[in-house]
Length: 120
Image 1 (cartoon, rainbow, N blue to C red):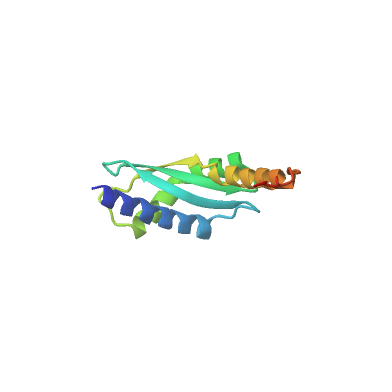
Image 2: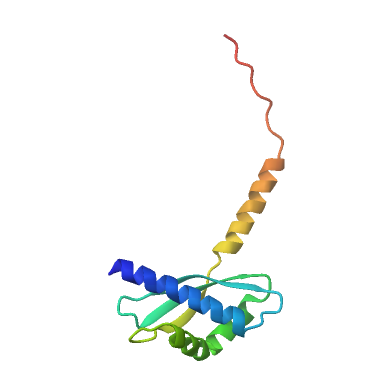
């Protein structure tokens, strides 16, 4: 069953991503679907959304408002007994990754101690 859930999660992630790319304009924001987590009974799905640049609350409000539209588009392409009810959540892992890379760049610029010569 876990293998089937994994396949359904990946299929839904791909199809929701396509709908979001084709049918929405984000005005400078990069909006991607990073993960979908479907419940065991396939009735609900948490959709994790990464947003780089742009207004995160505005994007999430738009996705929540257009949830029914997105579900109907996905249900036409994905054949399941029930189309899961989508709930969108912010995935901040991409912005945390960018912050971590910037922090590592700053650490690399710090002065380092000279190497010690080992005497034998």
